[in-house]
Length: 395
Image (cartoon, rainbow, N blue to C red; front, side, top):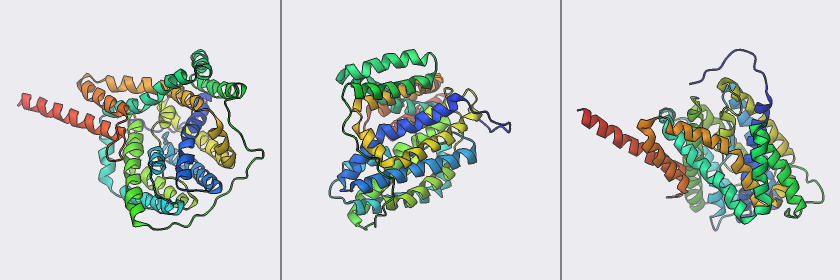
């Protein structure tokens, strides 16, 4: 495991770009889902903007503190599967959903006090953790070419631009895709209408309404999917990169942030998994003890996004889906390579690792719990069976 150094850190271009790209990928790649979830429960445009601004401020403050406090590339995010859960629910109002957000945050805070959970996460086999990460990343990477089939004129040139630009700088290629892709989308007339005036950022307090059906049907499942599909994979990402994540500290701070921002319409905050991989690999910095310096730039980007929250909601929603898919998928090709190499490196764990990857990449959902959790469970069960068989043979 990596340990912090006491020498004065030097900020490199790769640290800056990794932090900025991770924030933009996380924000741009899932913002339409967050907007759809808020619209599904009847939120007004002002309440939607308030929720997004609250999330951006939560990402900025939690990431900045955790990165500085623990000297690790600990990246916060919002609960993407939680957004999908809300968007697919029926009979909810924004007031009852806010109450469900508060319940999920409270359950996360209680979880932070249970130390055996942190011990369990830290004992995850690195090969299984990396395979789960690879399975999560795989679906995003192949989405680039699915989008290319649907819109070849917009997406396929971006793939070529990425391959050429990556020869100069790994994340320079991603930024080139973003800048040129937005310009190309405007040129092709694929961008929807934008607001005529720049909306001012504001927070709108929403009084929660307690509803037992919503608390049980939404609050508890939101907590489960946040833990199983976000926090556990997020811890696995850090472990796969060689870090020992401070489980209780991360859970406690993100839970408190969730409780504070929920009354403003903000979804649950948690540990990032997919975007975190952009900041934990060698593309961010060759020295693992310096990669935590991506966190202040990640946080600063979210402060900027919060200031432009209402306008960014309209802008990101107006961009074509193929552009967002290409940007996110190409940004995650490098982390996918690293995760695959780590997961396949231990021959004794190769079969459980492949099983983990297959289940995770399948996108299977059971009991409202995402495939990342089931992939991890399948890999650990397979590994346990193999170890039991080996012990029996040895006896």
